[in-house]
Length: 139
Image (cartoon, rainbow, N blue to C red; front, side, top):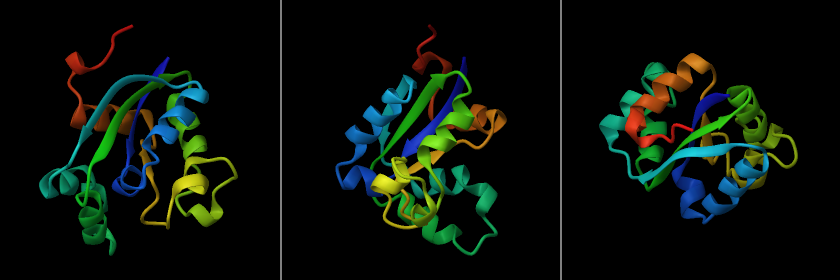
């Protein structure tokens, strides 16, 4: 079993799509081992997306991610990182496969409904950003 991190972004939460996204993730075999709804601060968003600090979209991404509540998720299943990337769909919803989260619920390339870790190493860091070991189900 592998764990990964995901976040339902403010656009999807505000539009009332969080429940449908959670149901889709469970239907795809993910077990939710941690869940937290929160409104991240600007400092948290800047830290979480620090890898993009030099990119032209960084400030708008930080502003977007702090505009409303998000749902942070710890997910588990075999090959979780790879499978989550498939279930999320392409970053640009126009290029996302039918039935993926982004095809169904994303508004645009920036307002794209969901975040998911891109590698097991990234997942470990991102999980630690929002969850302590005590927050996560062990079995």
